[in-house]
Image (cartoon, rainbow, N blue to C red):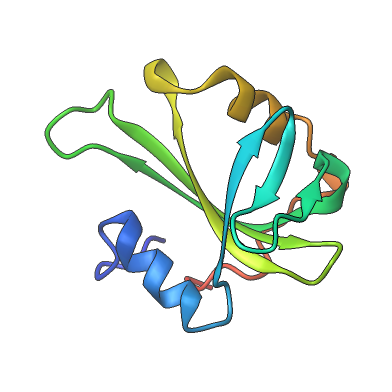
Length: 111
């Protein structure tokens, strides 16, 4: 069940930051890159430990997923991705390539 006080992505981002998920990432050339350390990760280096999905309040086509990530280098952070009609194909391909064994919901703050 979604937390009634976390209606927007930014609410969750702040709550996860309090738990140490402070890194920000971007996708380039089929790699996930930490925006500060510049460490590059392949899909097998990434662990999705929670995710939260959103639909836009004014436009249901405005959809996003907030991924809560941990890496094989002990970096913890978040990644906000559009999905649906506005999804970026390179970003979608990267997240779809993360091995199923690396995906869980064990750190979901709603549990």
